[in-house]
Image 1: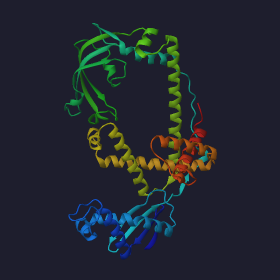
Image 2: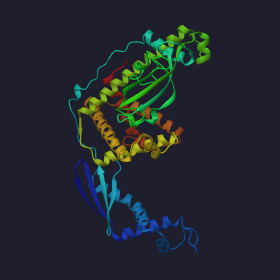
Image 3: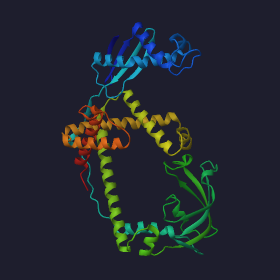
Image 4: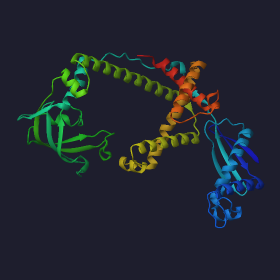
Length: 427
């Protein structure tokens, strides 16, 4: 087979292979034999019919597809040898001619990456204080409020009261917003269950009082039709009730939470948990700051095939998550008010950022000479192999050797862990 090589922009190499007629015929024989395995042809045992009879029953496009499947490994091997390409993703294959059969492969190599002033990349390491008594009390209050008792009162509503009301809503043009209309709505003022912009208008209202207010809705609201818009809300209070919380006792903690704790020990546990949350939040903030700075400092020209490969992975992940939620991509698109074109465009932007970040982080690790030890890699590979075995996945032995898929994946993860730890520090 004759293969020509052409270097393209964005670190891509195109190879074009013309398949000789005699080699194509041999591949077609293999393809017809494979296709015939599942055919029932009268007068012949399954898979034993003459190839010409099988050919008559096979669509030309199907025959071509199976023929290329048989040819592709040899074409790929020859193209890699001729071009000397070192691809970082699976190459894209295209048929540019059916006669003579001509296959074009696009190999994407690692692009040149520039990281601006890697020695200057750092993050602010804000100190983390322990949870305050007020924060502990507020957390416990949110638990106690679930077992509250209420009593109607003949006074103006105050923070901590429950209001029973009906709500109506109209958009800026005066059209009703059906998703926001309800005749029975209960809200505990200060519970953060209602828009913060609406709660202040409830304070001071009494039973049978009505009010109309204009509220700006956040850009990420669950109801797509009101995102980032001003909405006219009609409030009609039916009842104001005072709230009494249960006392925090050892008996309450045991019955409600299933824990043998005194109130003081429970408060200490809550403080420790909230403090841990603060530490995790600060660590996440540091990491996000690092990633954003690396993205901003990284210059790289990405091949479209590289981006589309990332997008395909994102789509597959989304479909799998939706499947676990017992819904489909079509149903999800309908519920979110998005169309497929817009979602794919959003994913391409995310994919571009992700790939840019990965290249930038690798450059930063190289600049700082961060490398896991052989012992660390070996231990991580053993853990990965054991985990894979439990899940029913067995890695070929060559995957665990230097240059193998598992080896490179483990090395990368360890390298990134070390890099992040060095820059963001510990809390």
